[in-house]
Image: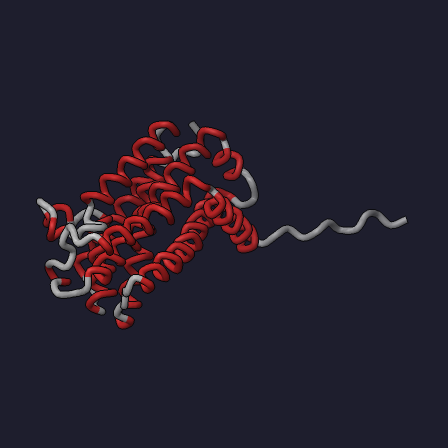
Length: 257
């Protein structure tokens, strides 16, 4: 009598990462609080600031541009902050508390595969956000400069990487309750005074604020989508944040409390 046949073949690393990424992305899209921060609030900001003529937005390099054209890139940057930083920091904090990170890190997926899957899930959610917010902006009269598609894409990738690394620093090192409070506080502070919705040229200390990842991302997107130009300074600032925050995350990220 022959013995039992061979079991099913193990899934490839790529299959495992993609399956986990899909699971993470679906979870983010189904989470009501996350959708509020990542989708609803940016759209409210877009509509309200598009209809209210205060504060002045078409300043500096974008002087003379339509208000909606200057506003929309900032709202897109706000969406990146919401998903890549606020949402991921809070998720990491509570996954550490519940032991989820430690458990998944010991599976065949591995720690590297888990982090890669989380990064891919952020990109998927960002794509959905950008499509929805972009559609609302177009309905309000937004006409982006198509020549800026390449620099805008690079800025979005660098911005997502910088904020995800910062999320790992925060969510991977502090208690979940502290992460929840700080992540939301940072979101509010950067949305109001971080050069996202209002360009740094209209804010006190604009030169210093332009070094923030939020301001650099918004400036790079405005230059790309309003002027069709590459903002080398803003992109270099974002790259520096990716490198520095990534190095810090490697030291600070803990897989369990």
